[in-house]
Length: 101
Figure 1 (cartoon, rainbow, N blue to C red):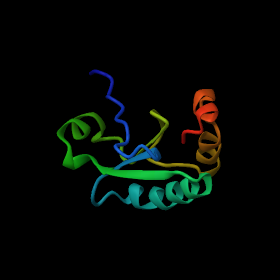
Figure 2 (cartoon, rainbow, N blue to C red):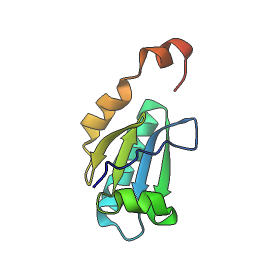
Figure 3 (cartoon, rainbow, N blue to C red):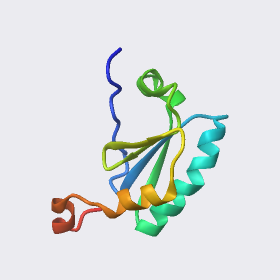
Figure 4 (cartoon, helix red, strand yellow):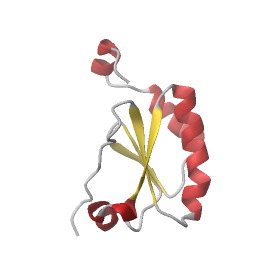
């Protein structure tokens, strides 16, 4: 089995990509936490349904929700607010220098 491809948000203002699917109870629990922490950090969350994209479904079908921060998988299944807050507080030096999200 190959490593899943990590997608990037289509929205350049979004540092967080939340992969979900309809009927996922873990997704329903995690999304409010992710949105609250992203709001606190001043960034956007892009929510993407993996069932709307065949490649995402193939790569992530057993892992939702998947929380991707700055292009790296931060969490699967469950998310801890404090850990996400820490991840969102860290930004690459070049993004801090250029003022990019």
